[in-house]
Image 1: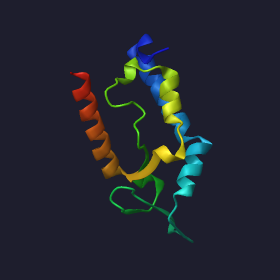
Image 2: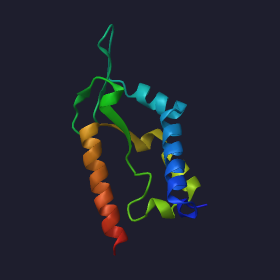
Image 3: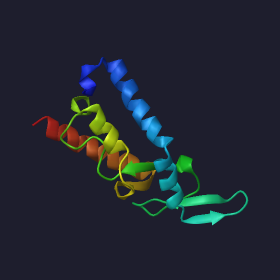
Length: 122
């Protein structure tokens, strides 16, 4: 089934459920633990490094786990995607994941979305 087979409210609910499941999965948890670059005792805690700007990040609220190859491929609209394809691209191999600070993730996603819509309008 494709996302477009559902009404827009259900479509968004399915997407959100898959993304939330990923964030709560052992895959996600193991990935972020594997990317800890510094560990301090006490209140310092764990730190991660942005894969783009190399900024040191003090907590999980400061970064996003980014799919290097986007979940929704450039040139394809998510509503036209098969739900299982979306699921399998969300739950991908470690090699397709990276830590990005919120700022770098916003820039990367913005570029992908601009390119995606440019491709779709052709």
